[in-house]
Length: 114
Length: 111
Image (cartoon, rainbow over all chains, first blue to last red; front, side, top):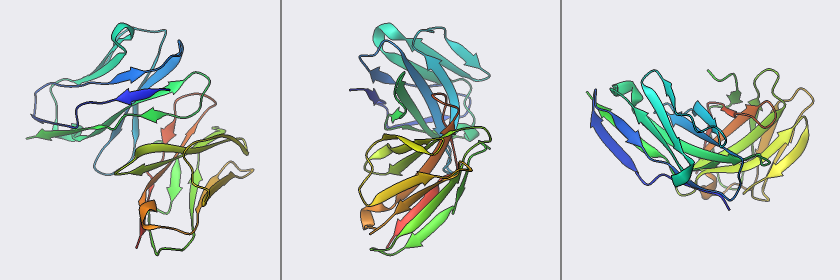
């Protein structure tokens, strides 16, 4: 079975602070895909990043960066110099290579205070 | 804007009723997925269609059904509604087994 754990339920920071969201996953597959989605207060789910299990390169996109470590089954997400617009629920998700569904973690609510 | 559209945005109905949620995928995407987001269960996969055919089923109740039409839009039918069916229902689309892009969701409230 596959499982995604986001142990942090809520994180509150002051603007310009960095925030790191943890994601730990479980799967027996050797090929799989990891995702991060953002759900702002308006409710939609916005795709942020996809990472293949065979590509362990970290990625940076503007103020967002992701750290993928197969050895610890983690795919952590860091927001640098947070802004109020970053306030949202962030979901980590896992998909097997031959499966269609996304298995989501419970989400981490990030609140950035001005 | 993901390119996936869902209607209606909000739906309020009574227990025992039946509703239909509609989804139009991104242009060119053959796969459509339905997910339910509730406070107690989180985000749960319901069902997937690919080019008109059912491909995978998740935690979908027997009272729920879906279909994908020749123009690739999809409908999720929820019947004999119960209070516990109140949730945010998302549709997503993707090109084959690729990144899923989500629509804005339909918020269903059952009174």
